[in-house]
Image (cartoon, rainbow, N blue to C red):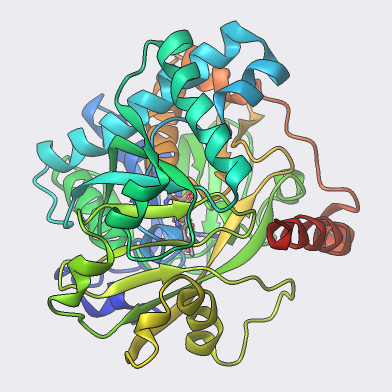
Length: 423
Ligand SMILES: Cc1cc2nc3c(=O)[nH]c(=O)nc-3n(C[C@H](O)[C@H](O)[C@H](O)COP(=O)(O)OP(=O)(O)OC[C@H]3O[C@@H](n4cnc5c(N)ncnc54)[C@H](O)[C@@H]3O)c2cc1C
């Protein structure tokens, strides 16, 4: 089965389809979902000597891991000052340490397993409003003072304009450790590394039911896995598999496009080939691909249905930032589902002592989902301390549960989206 059409699917490294599960197998661990969470859980478990089976409903990286913006951040999705206020300094420090580790872990896995995924350094956060620039500057100072973190610097307005060919921004932060990559090829590389360590992966194998006794029984249409441990790693694509955790995450569609290759113009748009994300609630995020296209994510839609013309939909916010691209062809446009939580921090935990889950990365999963899989592996191996730093974060359910959560969320999103438009 083909991947949904996207620039990433069109430029994916060779990855022959893997056979679906047939019959009964037993395994130490069954991982459900072959995105970054599931794949890094499997890889780390195999390195610890566990026999691991990964079941994927579609293809490896078919979910958000094969469709995202490719922007590798540092730290957690929420800024440290907010985490300090919400959770206290000690907990915020632990989260920061994990967030810094997550960024390094992605680079380490890419280097160690020689994953060919166009990794390039640098992430620029761009202030959409003057007040955002003041806030970004104070964030740099705070991280240096409180966390001794100096791998970022404030970029004043004039320099921003030299770095990115738009007048939209009032300042920014350049994160040296930030980076960007081809997300699907990163996922495919993780899968290759996991298989080389002995992990059995089955594509086109949708899990229909999981029982929670020990060993657990994981049922699919044509096969069953009996496993001492289960790691649930389905994120926004969880569907109805596990209603007890589904209410804590909300799948939200997000949209991207890729222009035609821009040739020499590409580096005029983004001088240093870093990735860029702005400070709006409905965020614009973009970067150059290896072949010089602009890959731009943005736009807002509060309907569960996809816009009819995705390319036209994302082109609008792209032209607000880069009107000079008006005559450029859009070669690809696609969507993917982000799993957000009410607090915009991940949701980790246990459904039974031997069934754990990690999801809800709220749009920042390249680093945190990669780490999530590693922490899940540690938890399976009986070293749950770091997994529990995440699992102890309180994740309220969306009001209205899985059936009625949407209207409340939409009202909230529209409110914040309107705030983006105010000066
Ligand atoms: C459009 C978009 C842009 C994004 N941009 C960025 C970005 O620039 N930077 C960043 O850090 N993060 C970004 N993210 C977030 C990031 O992609 C995700 O947080 C991350 O990929 C989550 O990985 P995962 O493995 O948890 O989930 P996924 O990659 O979604 O994988 C879940 C897998 O589970 C499978 N599955 C579901 N149900 C079953 C079942 N019953 N049986 C078997 N398999 C099942 C699915 O088919 C899927 O392959 C973006 C997300 C989207 C959608």
